Image (cartoon, helix red, strand yellow):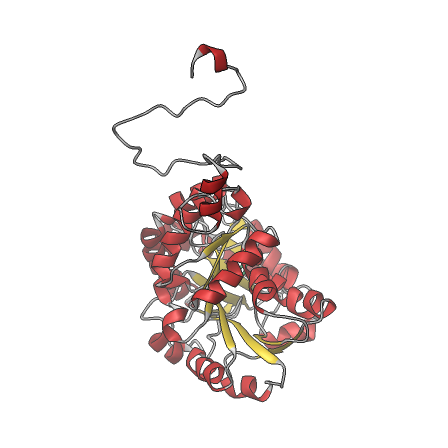
Length: 397
Ligand SMILES: *Cc1c(COP(=O)(O)O)cnc(C)c1O
């Protein structure tokens, strides 16, 4: 810049470097300057590669999306500002007034709320059906049904949807099959290879893995549907921030390593819990006593994941004692962090249900869900051992 044009507000040129950065640069820029109206036209028309405005897309989102595309065996996926933004994009982009959605009855809490309270207000309707039972799903298909929305592994009972049966249904009745793959991750299950039309993630959980990012991802198998999803994200403003995409990319680099470790830890912890007196039931899809163990074995390729649920023999008193005796195990309603977290569905995700409804799902006051982290497994066993003993004592005090 010659002196005549110098000003403190003029952006500096990025220094030239013959060498290149190893790490993806962070691009916080909201706007991208083009050379001329002709060039901008060409960018908007897709004839030239380029960005224009960050809500429409930015390099950090592109880099992250390509990595998750690769994991899911997809292309053209889209990063969203949260997992719920990805869920919203599916309904906003692919459905219209009067359309009916058939959904699993044990979905993520906010998805359930969206389906039962918010979408009906906007002219959509939804029915919730047990996704472990494809026949029950078929019976609920109506003339306006356009979409089936399921999670592969249900929260917090870790029941497995009958994905094979549901994919057949979707084909037979020409319904869009949407899979929220957050719990399973592409390491255990790749929905697009098993008949799904759309797959989505809360990147917030295992993919980013450090509880410091809120992001989502959505992709459709079909190119034109993918375009609709992308338009919905850009138009409704479901866009992610560059900084969070950058952080998530960094987290994703260790996803495979973390997954191996948390999965091995989860299997060992499930085994440990099953042997404790004071624990009435352990739910882990990798265990022979899990109600969907056979299905899990064929579906998940030996990847039973990091989530373990268990039921104390006692009630709320035992539950209170357990979390108080385990101050190092974060009692926090999330999952997929590097550190182990505990959640108590009766007081959090499932508090909206009546005790009888919870009972029907097996979610008692003594029910806990564990998102197993990468800690040393012997330490985890020690800490859980102490906590369960405290819970048992409290119940008998
Ligand atoms: C957390 C979660 C979501 C929502 O994701 P956010 O990033 O919190 O918006 C959706 N589905 C499942 C299965 C989840 O666990």
